[in-house]
Amino acid sequence: MDEVKQIVKDIKEGKIKPIYLLTGEEPYYIDRISEFIEQNVLSEAERGFNQMVLYGKEVTIEDIVANAKRYPMMAERQVVIVKEAQHLARSIDKLFSYAENPQPSTVLVLCYKYSKFDKRKKVYKQIKKTGVVFESKKLYENKVSDWIRKVLQGKGYRITPKASSLLVEFLGTDLSKISNDLEKLQLVLSKEKEITAVAIEENIGISKDYNNFELKKAIGERNVLKATRILTYFAQNPKDNPFVVTVTLLNTFFTQLLKYHGMKDHNPKSVASALGINPYFISEFQVAARNYPMKKVSSVISSLRELDLKAKGVGSANISQADLLKELLVKII
Image 1 (cartoon, rainbow, N blue to C red):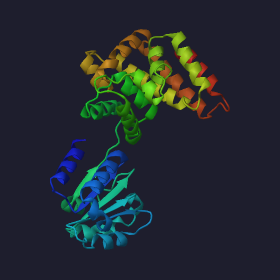
Image 2 (tube, rainbow, N blue to C red; image 1 turned 180 degrees about the horizontal axis):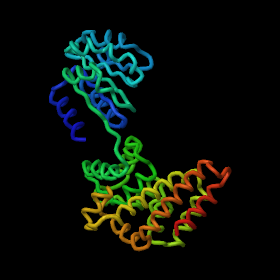
Image 3 (tube, one colour; image 1 turned 30 degrees about the horizontal axis):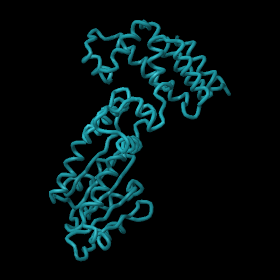
Image 4 (spheres, one colour; image 1 turned 90 degrees about the vertical axis):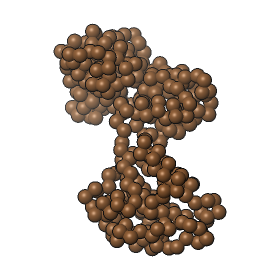
């Protein structure tokens, strides 16, 4: 995020490079930087003649170079943005000559999304010399909650750990999707109040009571009644609560619990760091550790793997999600 801020800051200060290679598996920041360049390098009056958007599926490197070598009309610069540049992977080396001597009055932006640019290529090294290379790395799931907190904090909002975890559980690690829902929350919620799980339920439509987050907690507490209610809800709403998501989350939880059992230092800071969790959730592991000895945890992990295979049709065809959920509860608790 700091690197993104620096790129934006430099552009605002007029320190604009002739080439920007925006690459990586996480499209969110690639989109944000390219949108910023699209909206801020040229004035509204200049854009009509001096800004163009090309698509990697529809153009060749020769087309891009030809457009990049044009001179701007009645403006200091022109902007050429190439979206979906990853489709030019086989011919991208042809851009090397232009990267060696780019047109100083052109700002060429290459949006190379969903994959990493090969850093061994000469063109990559040359763009690093004459322009800017930004790699947008995919965030691990345990880092997304913190990302949500920082984004909201930057806009004057606060969110509870439970609420941010709820968002991650239902929206995954797609930062664009999460950002869209955060914008919805900011439209209807006041900065004075902390964003809670209740606010998520009321404004985004995610149940604060019937979700994998609450299921994990109920299982950790060995609360059979609560776990049964949640799993019954899942069985009745299979499309909104796919079994694969449930079994994956529980597998992660019990794997972390196994690691917790193996730790000598159970200091909250040490646990949070080792397990990659928010300190807010440490109490859940403390409770679960008392309810599930290490031997039982190993057995649960084995059962979860078996259930995952069954769900994929291995050794058990046509088993319903309701039956899988019942078996899950029996084998764990």
